[in-house]
Image 1 (cartoon, rainbow, N blue to C red):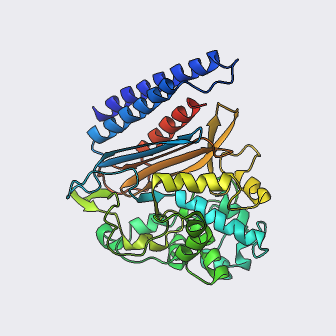
Image 2 (cartoon, rainbow, N blue to C red):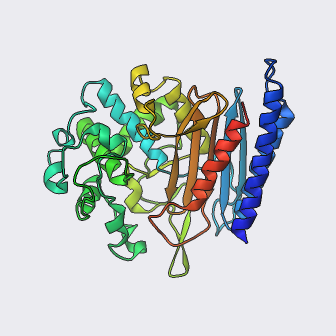
Length: 383
């Protein structure tokens, strides 16, 4: 059974990780780094996990690990199930909600310029916010960033709005995304508590667009891709996919459907970006090394108050330092990904998978949770 086989592979990774941690503990009285052969054990475990994913129907798996100033990359599978061209580690893929980290950076740049206040009400920047969405109480920019608004998920009515092959190929502006959210009742009387919703980042993307006077794709290019030299990172316009892009697939009525370049993702500020495993690592390294934002802005994004979500950033336990990894997972039609970085950006792992084709759903794909587990274990073995 596929799930059982992945479970065995995951246990194998856990065993390799445990052995690496024991070796690190035994050598803790000396400053020597982890022996190279122990690194190879971790890489072999990641390769085994990759093979298990391919055996279970994933078209492609891409990985990049960075530590000790070095990078290890891996690619398995094919870019395209029709052409069967082999995938490479430099191929672009849909990063899903990793996009949220990028949008949060653009918001913080506006904060640094004095154009946005984190505790200002959203209606100050989007006057129609209250009349369109009818929130049960004041909503601030900070609450959007940390998903504490209670704003309904616009994907629910979007998925139900018609046959998905037709819906996904219609452009969907940020205004239209929020209008869809307005058709779903708010479940809370007050906007409080963590409740993950893509609609929060649709609102943030619209704030960025309005204040910059240009599209969200252009802003992300100017704020992130251009300064860091990221040639494959951004929100692509509708049209043919780049020749080297890893294709994603779903099934609709039992038929396989290519979802690599659907039109609706072109303004999806919550999850429409494309990148490579290397460029995702470069982005997060630049963020945590202070190359994109001031120290106080970066500290605000990380939120050291015990919560598990910062400004567009998930967090995981870094047992090497007793601190935290920061990054994000991506889960979108056809694709899953996870990127984790130590707080100083010195240890990083990004893994991307083209999912085995399945029907579209708003539920979190359990495979992306496996990616999280594997990434966290592997990084904790690379102290």
